[in-house]
Image (cartoon, rainbow, N blue to C red; front, side):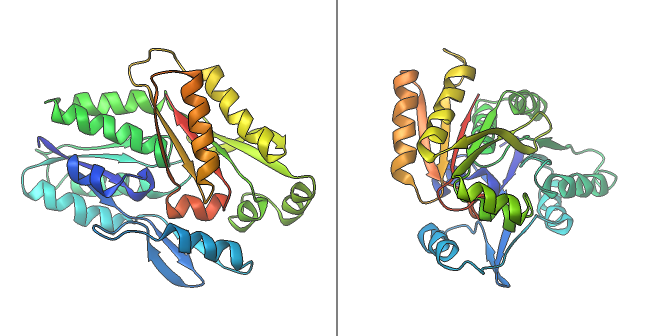
Length: 288
């Protein structure tokens, strides 16, 4: 390959995709009551069912997520720079994690040491399936012979064209992550509030709609797709992610296909870091 292509575990890529497209992945971590869990390890299948079951059954479970630190990026990038390779890193949104910022710090440290090499960092302004869709487009462009600058420019453009929405079922998980107060979580739970969050122009996760009732919230996701998708766009990929509600995720996928025949929809689990923040029963929808 003409350059090393990096992303992080937030991109929700499968082992098959990572291997097929020669993508390098740095991993975030989740801590459960002090037990650190690596979100992605090559060759290791993450047990999503056990992870979600633990979230459901232990209301006192203390969960913390950790970004990829600067030292990890320094070690990862430098190995390629020493070998004469340039590096392109497509990061999860800097609006929801400090991971992108740490990669930029690492790049600033390494550039004077390797002035003949390129290190390019792109903030995808999204996460999970949305980030993964941008990474896969970049990988395919690289395989077609595109140079780093062209691939980076494409990824930068696509980061501003991605729509990212997440319907949250249990507000207590937003409370645990410090996104909302305890009183707001309690009040919302009483009236069956199912907020739909969106990624804004700066990659932050913000409230888009307050929906009362799960069925209405899932329908709201479909309506957002109908409103904003572009028929016959250059890439008709759609990503749907879920936390232990696979049947509903596939029903939404079928509705998307009915709305837009010929579209390709991939359904997958939320990766562990995001799942720990949005909680069981959550559904995400990502499209260009």
